[in-house]
Length: 310
Image (cartoon, rainbow, N blue to C red):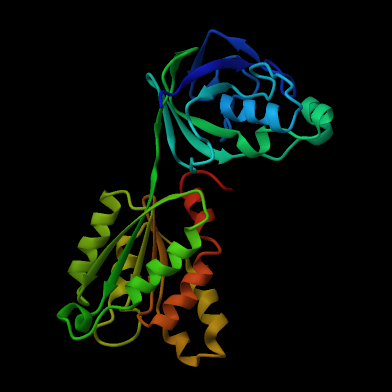
C-alpha cells in the first residue's frame, strides 16, 4: 500500500490544536516552530488517518475531525500503527524518524476532544518519534516504513553437546521462554543460535559477531560454574564495556535456599556497545529460572541502551 503524508500540523503552544502547513522543516529537536520540539523522545507525533476515521465512525458519532485536532504533527495514510514497534523507523525523503513511544496517557478533562466525546484516539493509536536525520517534508510526501528487528542471539557452550554426545536442550529452552514472552508484544523478534565447545576463542568470536551484526541481546548458556572448562564469565567480562551485577546477584540469592548449589554460579550480565549479554548456567531448570527473572527488566534495559526508558 502506498504510504504518504495526509497533513503536517504544528502549534506554537502546548495544549492547543495543531494547524496544517503545506511543508515543515525538521531539525534535530523536532519540527521548527512546534511547541513539542525539544531535547526529549517525543519530538514528532504521528497518527493514521485510518484510525481517525474509525474513531469518528465508531466512537464519536461520525463527527468529522480536522487534521491536527488530536495534536498530531504528521497525519498519515497507509501505515497500520497497530503493527509497529519501538525503534522502527520512518523515512520521508532525507528525513528519518525513530519510533520511541506507542500511545500516551490521556489528558482527560484537559483534552477538548475527551471532554466532548468521552474518549480520544491518540492514547491508543498515536505514536511518537525522535529525529535521526532532519530536512524539509511536504504534504503528500511518500513515507517509507522500516520495521526494525529485535535481534536475539543464543549461544550454547558445551563440549559434549558440540561433539554430539547429547542434544542441547538449554539453548532451545531459552528461545521457547523468550518466544512465549514476546508472543503478544510489539516487537519484531528474530532469533539466531550457535552451539560451540567450551572454548574461549570461539565464544569471543561469536560475541564479536553478535555485536557486529547489531544483535540486541545475547544469551549464553553453560560455562558459568567452577569447573576447569568453565570460562564464560571471564571471556564476557573482558569483552564487555559495563557489567550489570545486580541482576545475577539477585537471582542467585533468590534461589539459594531452594537450591544451595545455585550460589556457586558465576553468571554475569553485561553490556557491549548497544548489546546486552546474559550468561546463564547450563541446566534447563536454571535457564528457566534465570530467564523468568531477566524478562522482568529486559525491555526496560533495551530502551535504556537506546537512550529511552529512564
